[in-house]
Length: 209
Image (cartoon, rainbow, N blue to C red; front, side, top):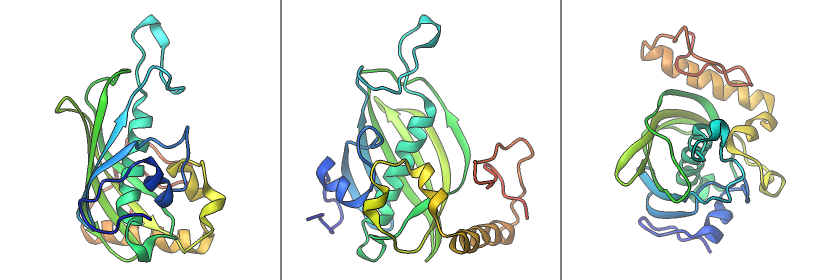
């Protein structure tokens, strides 16, 4: 049974009751702190056996920044899905912005990941995340997400958070995107002209109004 109270530590078995991800696509090894609707802290142990390590250039192996970004996304998903009413819903990226990769992460590093809620509504929200090694920031940024309708969690086992959005119901995906667009436009935010795009077309770094 997954603990429901705040500050309850979660091991891999408990995390797998919340997330559909499984090894090798599960990038959160343990949750050490959990305050529902507020913040979460988790750990990612980087080993030499990681199949995603980058070994280009003959230098020391490095954990790709995209994997760190996915780890923060998974930790944020745990925070959202830990609430019983959200347990069967699907969170997916609506945007990432102001992400900064500060320094490389190598095998043997223990990455401490923290995410806290900036804004949370019924169908969308925003999280700010930071990953640290030995107290030094290696990655930080803000992620906007949308919540899809309840679904068959068993069908999603082993798939990355950034891929699960592709199976969201088109109407629900459109409504969630519209909610995100409306929120950003209401706040007067301007799109970033140099921002890349996610594969499903949502602009990262700024949302066009």
